[in-house]
Length: 259
Length: 259
DNA sequence: CGGTAAGTTGAAAAATCTCAATCACGGTGG
DNA sequence: CCACCGTGATTGAGATTTTTCAACTTACCG
Image (tube, rainbow over all chains, first blue to last red; front, side, top):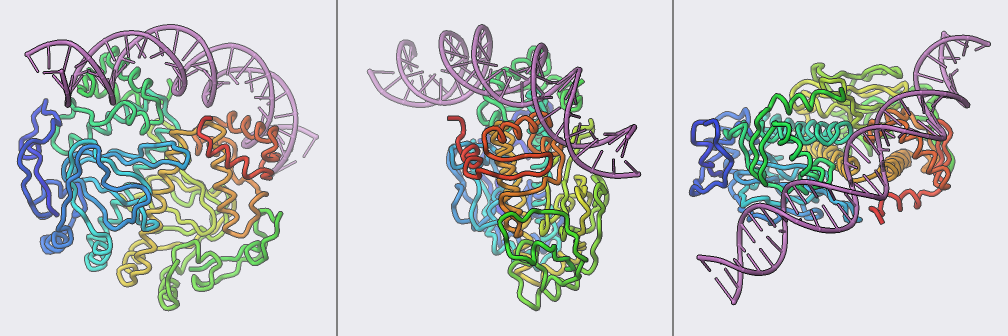
């Protein structure tokens, strides 16, 4: 599995490091030496198995900002592991409704919905210039019949997506605007932190409208809630630049149902 | 895979047949002759493979109404295929929020969320006296390494759950109360119809509160919306007994975003 | 029967959306 | 190099939807 190393991931974690666009030269590496390997598919594989997986994942693809990685209705042939960059996935209904179902960053898998019917059920759009590892699905199935650990980690990844989706349902079904946004921000910073970025300072890759679509809110509500969080001293927002000032305060918002 | 044949499923489809509780004697049959086999795990398996699967799924379990099939936090060891009856699954957050994430009927699989961490991430509760086939997960993994078709149909089922969840997100994020309830009813009747029940007449197995939890609405809103649908001539409701009078009208509600 | 859980309905409150005006910023072309 | 343009973001005010609280009815179960 080829990948680049975002500069930040080769550096020690420093407190105010920000997820600025990656400017280093892309550097090809195999799954075995990929810095994302603890986040991506090959969790728990031994050296020999990793080698085999490398053979499988031999192509990569770059996706410029704004381009589709795949579209709803297209034939499903491969999964994609994000190497660098940032994606959104969204489903639409016949009548033009549109719902962002997730945001994916380095090490996360795209395309699992396509397995169900050999066709993709959502659009995947790059929110910044991105690159992905292409994982041909039929070969992945084949290989996962040989290696128990690969089979197991693939199943876990699918199951984890289901668990994640249930969490989003809880958010959409039970939480009010402030709680949704707080939960969203905490989730985002946690995932960035797991990738070596600052837990407090980040650049949003998506618009207010996309955040709103994900959270079931209108963009104005998202904007207003950001402003309120700022007034309350929970964070600083300036356009897409964001700094968390009181993580515990956000967490408290999420936890306290309605008291 | 042992199963019973609900009386309704052995009868021709008649227009006003209702999903009344099953009162026939349970009758043990194997996956190979299970009436649910087109809905359940063994889709696309040949005779020999079905025999093997039968060996794997040798135990069943009955779950009285109100009892848990499994609980959030319990160790995950098996998947469950609903043979007869009706379940809900729900996730809860630390602070006592509760969200129904799905309703499962005959032929549908429960427990996929448990694979991610070897522990269940939701509660599964029987909404009527039910019975399930127990599918030990480790044995399923083993067998699906041997049979491509089993592996494939298992992956499809997981993927289908992801697609379903994304549909619920669309519903929760984009639709208003009437649209949500209409979409819910159409989904329910469609699934019942696929099982040989009437598409127009049904008995709700869940309370207004459970419907509301699933749809992100309060029980009063569900009740009011039912009443409105009745006033509009779309359906007749009397407690849990429900008759669809204008399926196209419900469909139109779902389709017309906001015009 | 009687008690309890579930369901219905009304009226007021709250949250969110809609519409509209304005502001900020990045990129482009004169 | 700077003015201009367009997209995205902010903010306000009023409209709408949904929730909340409360009273009351109905059905079910022992």
